[in-house]
Structure formats: C-alpha cells, structure tokens
Length: 351
Ligand SMILES: *Cc1c(COP(=O)(O)O)cnc(C)c1O
Image (cartoon, rainbow, N blue to C red):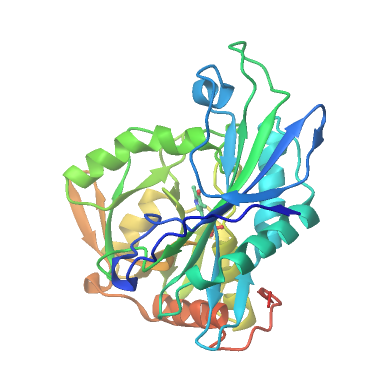
C-alpha cells in the first residue's frame, strides 16, 4: 500500500481535553472507486478534500459511515473490537444505498496499517480510545439524481475521551411524539448520512427543554419505542431485560448485539420484542420498570435516569444507574480493554 507521511506532525491534545471527535490524527486512508472497480487504498496526510461543487454527495447525500474503536493498554498492546462486523454492516449499507461493496479483507488490512502508523495517538487512560470513522461518499460530478459511478471511501481517526462530558451519569431523554427517525422500508437500519440530518430538529428541541437526546417511536402508530439518536435502547422490567426487536427501522447496533450475547451467556433473561409507551407507563405506575439504558460504540452503555413524555418526567430507579446497567458497562468495557477475558472472540489484537 502506498503511504505518504506527513511532514508536519501535529501536537497531541492533552487527554483531559479530548472529548468526542474533536481531534484527528496525522494521516487518513483513502480509496476511490472508478471505472467499475476499487483502486488500491492509500495512506496520506490528513487534509481537506477538494470537491467540485456539483459532487453528488453534497446534493443528494448518498453516503454512509461506520464507527468503531481501537484500544491501547499501558504496555502498548493495541486491539480492535468486532471490526469485521462494522465492515459487514457497512456493506449492507452499500446494498441499500446503491454503492459498491467493499472488499472487507482489503479495508480491514488497510485500517490496521493506518492504526499502527498512528499508534502514538491512541490514548491509554481509562475510558479513552481511538475512534475510527470509515466513510463512503458518492463523488460523481453531475446533478442528475441517479446512483453514481464514482465513490470515495475514507477512514479518519480521532482520539476520544468519555462520550459524555459529565461522565457516566444517567441521562434525561425525551420521548419524541411528533417527528420520526425512520419509517419501515426507509433507511433506518443503515448508517446513512441523511438519517442524522433528519434527527437534528428533534434533538435541538429536546435540548432546549433540558433533555440530552430523544427516544424515537415507530413511524406507523407512534406507539412503540425504537431507539435513541445513536444508541439502541434496553429496559429492565422486573428483572427481565427487553430491547426493541430489529423490525427494519432500527439500526442493528454491534454494542446491542454484544449486550444481548453477554446477558444470554449469564442466563439473565433478555427478550427482543415490542415495547409500547403503555408498557413503559405501566412499568412506572406499578414499579416494575427497574432500569433503562442505551448502547452504542461511542458511549458503550449509558444509563437513562429520566424519560420525559407528554410534559411529564418519569424517573427511573430514582435517577440512579441500575445494577444490570452497571454490570453490563463494567463487563463490556472490561472485555474491550482486556480487563476481563473475552470468551466471544470479539477482541482482535493487531500488534
Ligand atoms: C451507530 C448507531 C447505533 C449503535 O450502533 P453500535 O454498532 O453499537 O455503535 C444505534 N443507533 C443508531 C441510529 C446508530 O447510528
């Protein structure tokens, strides 16, 4: 693979300033699709792209992305978490969005090379990691609305601290009863760029009301809960963990899948099912809704302390993190950083 190294390495940000997705490493990976095939991937210095103003991604949003993490321990061992699953999911997104599929071996090997080149950028403090953002965009320069012939795949890397600046504190989430994220048959189950643009208005309204995010409901009946902006949702009713089934409008999270597998391996009851607003209200009223949490690569496991609905706030577990939530956070982050053994084959050492 061709590697062009930067002549102007950046200084690394202090660990306590990292935040999420604010700083980027010295290099990136790019790979173009032209004349019906993928070219060789290349590593180049991190820099802006020059784009013709007619480039189709800028008009019609034919683009998808992924998010995954690499970890480094104090001894310098670097690992990836379930990276191949991310590229498989990206290929599902390619099929839905009429984009050419990636050769998973090629992009995986190229990613490993990029990370090894940037290994000094991987933070080692607890809660920190290197966030990896593979992205695929349409780059044809014409204004007709049609699937394209030219594409660019790229990967950028960002050292990150804890996703929530406030730490692992239970969040306040507003159940969205007007706007919807994804209809059945839409693009909700792929990480397609437009999904996130469409969610911003609800997010802004929720923030003005003092909530950090919204919980989306199904688009048909506005009756069943689906997921949060970039997290899948779990609820614990009377010791039974429940999560919305993947009906087509919900993003199949890899963290969601990991949590389900951990619960199954511990014989903690877990159901993929439909969860209605009424189930949640009833759970508050009769005290059987014990816990709620979200799952996603960025935050891993995030406790929910308050659910807002129809002008009322429902406090879960007195606004404190629940036992199962805490257990899953500890277990999953422990497996990711090597604090616990990995019986699932999720952790991939790369050096
Ligand atoms: C990325 C994402 C998730 C979480 O997926 P992970 O693979 O666990 O990171 C959940 N919902 C949406 C809408 C997402 O974009």
